[in-house]
Length: 98
Image (tube, rainbow, N blue to C red; front, side):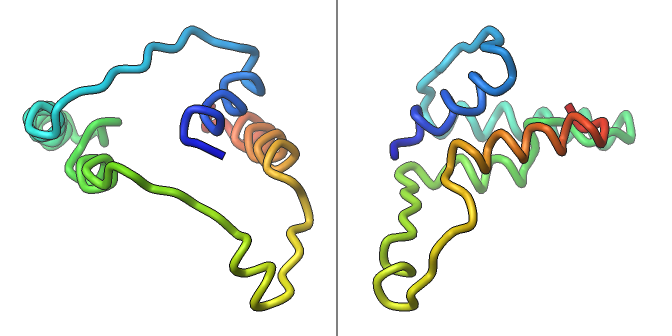
């Protein structure tokens, strides 16, 4: 499943909120997250775009595939991705994180 399909599952579970996908050069993301980090330190609040997020976002081609764990370890997930996303979103909502 590609990155957009995963975010589409999340968006769908949240009731299809507005979404804007932007492709930006990594240097621009660095500037934005640096500013976010600075603002966070000044206000004492953690911002959504900070140095930790930069380190995650600079990894451009993440792919997550559990097939090797299934094949080599016999792993069988309890839920498929769609059900897992639904449960995760519900938990975040019930616990006031969304």
